[in-house]
Image (cartoon, rainbow, N blue to C red; front, side, top):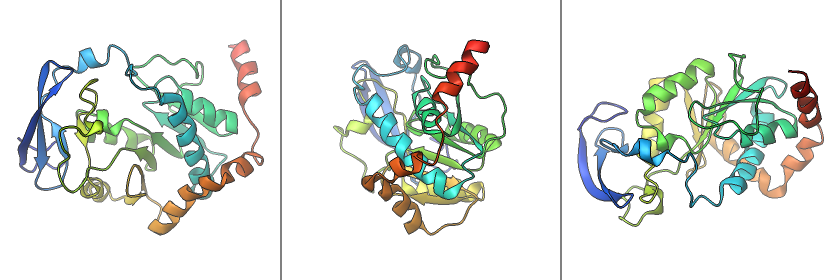
Length: 254
């Protein structure tokens, strides 16, 4: 099997049962360390509901990620610029960011926009974008990454890094019940992607990563994210003007 990232040879590592019905073949690339499902024929079924029934942490994670995003973007980017949550689902993260005071928009072709109606991405100039809990869902990751790079060269995203050893069959991140996780990236994979597009890669070594043209020390990226433990994001919000009421007035007029 050819790797979906670097086209090197990928070896079959295991076959697991997805959604209790489908046999999923997991391949590991010998070149870039990417692991993926070969032919996920069940995806249409898996996405009949955009959010898995078992995903009780959806709201909590959006709040958590919005705080990380606020601190990172205020340190690294022009906070008065426009930003985008790519594959933003129901629009919750973008709504939180606008409530904090950032000019955020949302874009998602497959999920109904519940919280950001009238504030969808319409080819605005974008300083940086977020893409949370999406990379593991991409069947053809390079295609999606190139779509993002046409919008901005700064991509703050999440995906749980693949351990050095292929995880056991009971690894929760396989998502065997819902069948939506089909792509798994090692740090080596992300580094390959960054070099391919002449970008810098910064990572917390676990779940949060940044592709960017900017050059910063990797410790500084980790330090910025660490600051949310001291609720520095709450202090930052005091320097911004929330768009909550502004947006409500705007939506009444359109």
